[in-house]
Length: 67
Picture (cartoon, rainbow, N blue to C red):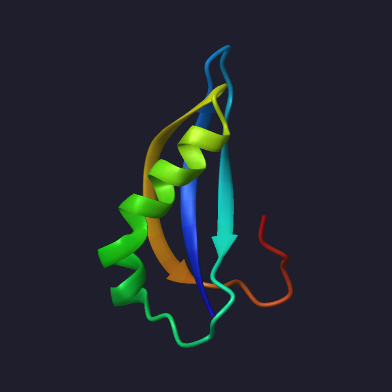
């Protein structure tokens, strides 16, 4: 499974890593990288108090649940 990993910061300060999983196991890291910017923009519009500092695509961590 592939995850979109965001480093997002509150406007009031403080940053954290947010991992968004793709439901389909067929989404490759390459496809995530190609279409991730649109997902980041969608997340940003839904979380007005946050700003995305950076993002990347990665394989899901085993045993951890993504946001």
